[in-house]
Length: 138
Image (tube, rainbow, N blue to C red; front, side, top):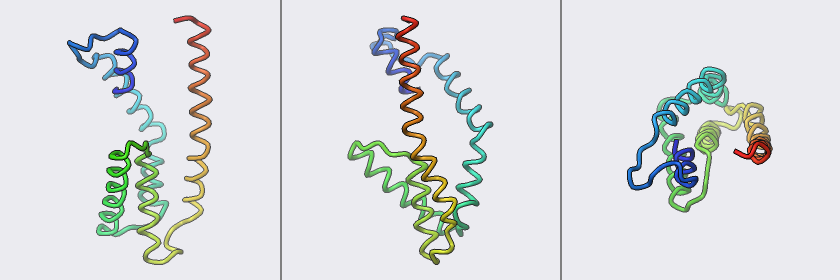
C-alpha cells in the first residue's frame, strides 16, 4: 500500500495535505495478498515450518529474535532486506547448532536458488510493465 500510495502522491493523483490511503488501494493490496497466500503462501509457510529443520519452541524464539535483530539493524542502516531471507537464515543457523545434519541443506539450497531467480525475474517483469506503460502512453 505504501509504494502504491507514494506513486499516487508523486504522480499528483493524491493531495499530500489531506493524505489518506484510498480505499481501492487498501482493497486491491489485501486482495493481492490473499490470492498470493491462497495460491502459494501455505507452501512457503510449510517449508519454513517443517522443511528446513525441526525447531523446539525455545529454538524458534532464538531464530525469530535473531532474524528480528538483523532486520532492525538493516532498517536502521537503511539497507533493504527480505524478512523471509533473514528468518530462514536464522532458522538454518539455529538448526545447525544441534548438528549440521539437523538442517535439510537440500531445502536450503532450493530456497537460495529461488532467491537468485527472484531478483532478475522481478527486474524483467518490472521492465516489461514499464515498457508496456510507455508503449500505451498512460
